[in-house]
Length: 113
Image (cartoon, rainbow, N blue to C red):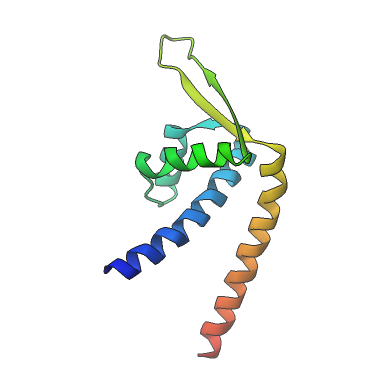
């Protein structure tokens, strides 16, 4: 894959992954980073820590997510759990609608080609 393709793919994946994070958190209520990575991998999406953690921090900074630290009762390491903020809850339906509209437009264009 050349540099232009890599840049395009990175931008496409960024927005898609942000939407996927919001979907998972809406369904589960809250989760921590490594659990999100495991879920994405189970779905067939390859996401690494170097991609996800900066994204979670940015989404938190932008007000889409809330977070809190929890320490497991069985002497584990503290984990930062993320959940949807009010803004994230309002943003997600619009993101899904836009994604579906774009998906339908692409399907139409491919069909007409």
